Amino acid sequence: MKKLKSQLSLAFICLILGFMITYQYRISYSKTKIVDTRQISDLVKQNEILKKQKEELDLKVREYQSKIDEIEKSVTIGNEAVEKLKNELDNLRVLSGLNDVEGQGIVITISPVDNVKNNYINQVYATDILDIINELNSSGAEAISINEERYIARTQIREAGAYIKINETKFSPQDKFVIKAIGDPSILEGAFKMPGNILEQNADRIAYTIEKSDNIKILKYNKKIDFKYAKPGR
Amino acid sequence: MKFNESKLLLMMSGIFTGIVITSFLVKSTPTKTIFLTYKDYQKLKHENFTLNREVAALSKNLVELQVKYNQYTTSEKRTKTILESLKKEYEEAKMLSGMEQVKGPGIEVKVDDARRSTYLNDFELWNSIVHDFDLRQLIVDLKNANAEAIEVNGYRVVANTSITCEGPIIMINGNYITPPFTIKAIGDKDALYYAMYNPDSWYKTMELRGLKLNLIKQDEITIKGVNEDIEPKYLKIKR
Image (cartoon, rainbow over all chains, first blue to last red; front, side, top):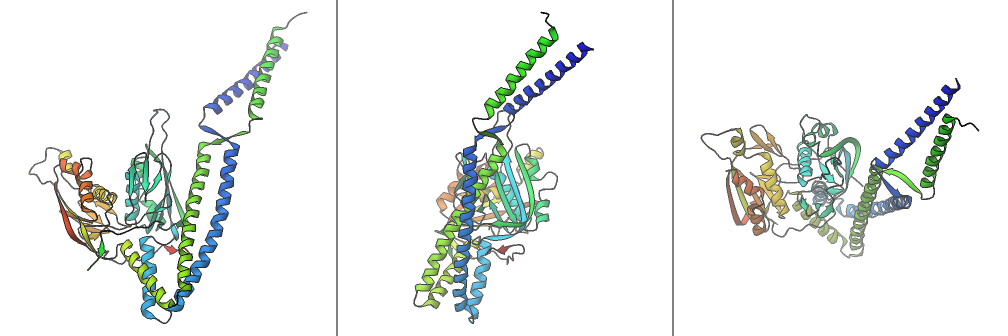
């Protein structure tokens, strides 16, 4: 009896020990990155400051926009031709990507699958993004942005050295890309639900998520673009 | 003194456990590190990146609005200034949206299927057809060479243009097109020509497939504006 008791307790201790060792083993081998708390709290703090800044700027922008709208209205009111011009201008600005817009739609996130086993580094290619944009457009997307870069008629998406350049802004092809589109959410999502769709075809290389949303905000195109060769002409 | 073997073993393992536990404590308390999965960190970083971009865009926006506001308030002929500014914005927006018909130097690319009397196999047949992705890739190459306006068989390529394969036919902006395809592009004609003709281009691989291709530099090309009215249904301007 006494022997059994001591054996049992021994077994219990060995069990705990085993758990502890495997736990430690798992922690050191699981895919975690140990980041200094200072680094994280810095990042969190920075984000909070940026959020505040964003709110303040947003308020100011609205204030000036309404002031300008008022002045423009005071001139256009009663003048039919000018009023028409203003309306058409607003419509054109939406189409050409010169306005911040919002509406319902979907958000697609793509990121390269890390292949730890093969030691092979995956990456996102420009054509991956371009193909998704083509599918979104064929499903009736009205505005598209990739990592907050508005997709307009003259947007260039290309590989440039170790980067992917979108509207001349550099992005790492090993990072994730967030593609937002405004349009009918169920139709947009449907384009990527069909068996054998472009995302499924590349699923071994690129991980993706699709989310429907009722409130997607897409920023306006924020660079200057010149027409050097093309001139308006009838 | 009589040694009990199992008791000794128990004691030894107790000591060992103690060492393991203390090693944990020693390791985790003084150097304040927390475990954060790489995903969490990435998420935080991406949020930071997005916020930075938004703030930059907003401040730029604000400066533009302030300049405009100052122009409006300080000018003596307010009505005239406003009208002029509206007209200028209208013209810029019309160019950028692709609604305006434009003229300028550029190149014209003609692409046609390779018609043979017999095909050795399916692969050769597949190679002899101009596919939707061929047109897309040509357009991307032209855009990357800074083409300012592009049209395919009379349909302007704009922000919401899609080119898809609809079985035996290709669809652009909801219109069916069939070969031969004519792509026109306005821009620096030498740059556009090189974008098509450099040894690494998609045009070259199409040439290798035996497709009928033709490339002409031109001093003046006319490209029509978007011919249908696009009425946004889901978009709202954010104010």
